[in-house]
Image (spheres, helix red, strand yellow):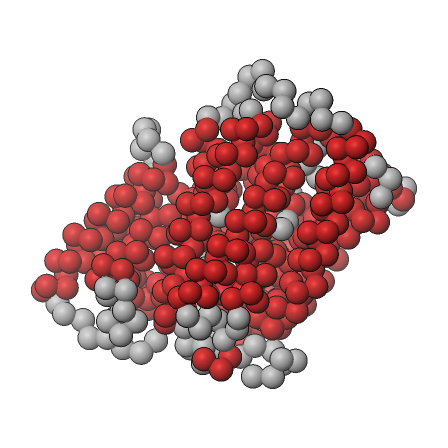
Length: 424
């Protein structure tokens, strides 16, 4: 596959000669996290609890997320296929395409809408405050949605090139912005206690994990391009933790000292609006491109499309996400995060049991199934129902219930009806 061509491998295993270095995938993972919503996460934590608790809860949450991403990501690198194909082992090909992949697709469109809405709003605010140019939010949202879709259409190679340029630039510019903001506003408010905390430490951990629930489950979309398990461990760890914590801390610091998490507006306040615009555009672009890319992958599965239709489906779903962004879906960000955790964490538990227990961590023993696999579907449905229980942590309840049920039900089903493995 030539570097300048559109990606053609969608659902089939990625050939070894088309796989990439762990650094390339780590940059993609980092690009996903370097975004305005990551700053918003830090801002929400800093507003809800003490600064030390905010940072520590985020650190614990990201550490748990990395473990999950490695456990699920290795499945992708072993099999060479994206999450929507991995899911056919636990839910059957029909169950995966009509239910699980549909959920993935909807969540990615939702993420695209949230990111696009935040970018459009921030861009319009920045242009108004810094340059006194009034651009309607919906116009900014549509324009940037279209620009971000172009990269997503070309697939993993375009993501690779974008992130090699964008991530180092973002690291340098955000570091400069943080230093200048501290010089401008001081640190007087940084460690002040919150008068009425609205979130516990465990709540901060839960919110952080919920923030990354989709990323943990969709890890195979990108780790399928890794050659070894070691590469997956390195890309997941190096790609997620430094970028995630840097953005969380930055968002928390900005919220405390400048009373807002939006670094683009902080740059306006300290007299550097052009740098603020650069950060805003690159941060959203690197992340939203991957959202549209994953949505397109899952659409191929949901609608049973030919492999070469991924680009078309990416564009169409990106348009849907842009329309949702223009009508203000970003206003429901926190509720959206909790819903993602409740929906997807039970599936993580099922994947773990299916690959690491039943298949013993071996790609040769993993079974791809046709039709609907009732054991996985029932376990997920009851796991999701358990997230509504009035006690405990919602997604933990759901994950434990789904994991235990799948272990029992699938174990019984395999004893009664041995299933022959097939190629994906």
